Length: 353
Image (cartoon, rainbow, N blue to C red; front, side, top):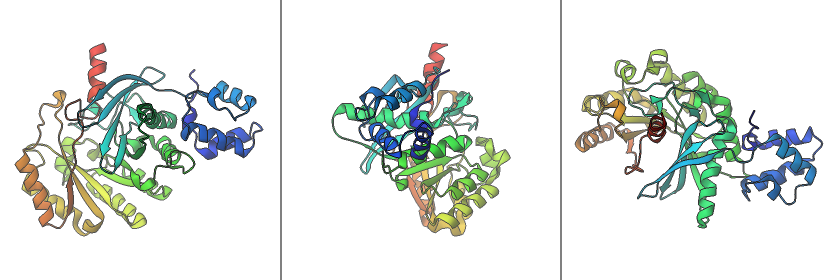
């Protein structure tokens, strides 16, 4: 049995665990500071933590659980990491450079069962959820990479949009958010974190009730049930109407915008009539919704889909604008490497078979 990662403990859980074993609350704060502020890679480096506590930590926890299998670096500064977990499974994590800071896209599952017909992440079925420690470990791996470069850069933003459906690994995902937000540690602001879901309506409601303060993005990708079911099989179980009701609940409680993600597939969902239908679906929600148009990164295994022409993207964008819908086109990163989410992992696994 592998020992669990200490990165999987929220501060309160760590303090409680240590207290049950006779350690004062101040000990948890010391350990937390070494983990996330000083970012040591061995318990023995926690020089002001007493020997008994260090022995306890060594016996029960792993401090480093992710190893680098492959790394791709793009000309635009994007870095895609293929990381190996303790059980040998591979996951992807991506560092992206923006004008507003450094963003990391994290994975929440080994594989994905949502089965979007255009997506590289779903090429390999889900084998398990990641622990909270394995998700936090991705952020730490990237931060240690930045530390080693000696430029005093820090991860400032997080998008939970990697391989897997975050809301299908709900509790571990919530613990991850609490850990990275904690002001005593990494202190990544809630407004700088976005969680993306393919549309698990009941979990959107639960997410709303947890009052985590982070942003919500929903992968919509089609303006009607017939088309959405064709490209996203989850729509059979959770069609657009209950999904929009869940979004309304989030909006009523948070008073902040939701992002609707819309990947543009040539001659599938990128026509003017689709844009008009999308505007109608958004309806009175216009002030609280932003549509993020995503140019498609082709995947060999999904050859039925192609990238929309630039003119089609422009017309779609302009049509939404004319309908008073807030809309943006996602800035692309890493187009000279395996840009599609899950693509690098899929290629590496197939190459090893």
